[in-house]
Length: 225
Ligand SMILES: N[C@@H](CCC(=O)N[C@@H](CS)C(=O)NCC(=O)O)C(=O)O
Image (tube, rainbow, N blue to C red):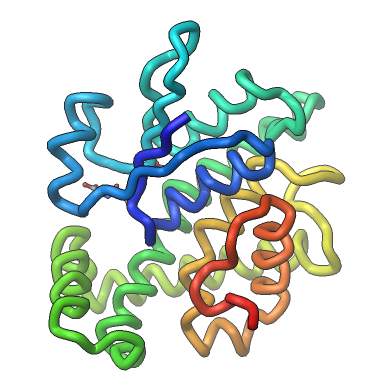
């Protein structure tokens, strides 16, 4: 299988966590932001990554969107499953996964890029890096007002997650699901931001645990050694 990705994207990390959790061997192709459209649009009709190419004649040729990749991987390799057999709990798994994907992952992106352009500029103050950060902020419309809204959305999410994730519990039921993988990947950009590290230490412990379980290298800010 081939995963088309941006190496730094938290949505691509989400797909890698699922591949790793299921111990599926795969290759990655890192695309260049902007130029990626030339390759991705003809394949999926979308402009976003990740995109998974299963590369087997009996399988769909292209799976775009991290949530669709989760569903595909559950049908391709059912154990361990990202869903839960109980229909009521399972509806919670996928509602949470969708909320994390469509709201919280975007809020994390807003807060992360605002940090990298301001207080966290020293992480990489090179002209080329700051140019990339400015381009991303322009592309997604990351303004100060929207960053404030994103930060308050993250606060709601982290208050919710605290009840479920502290003490090694899972977001739904009594084992890891799509919801836990989505949260671990989509909140990982916050690991570079001191304010979140100080206020939510349990969050980063859990993100690191889930990465280890999936055999995925830890995100920037949490690397060991
Ligand atoms: N809901 C999508 C979101 C993916 C997404 O936003 N990917 C970003 C990178 S983090 C992207 O490809 N942006 C480039 C673009 O929109 O052209 C998913 O889960 O796959």
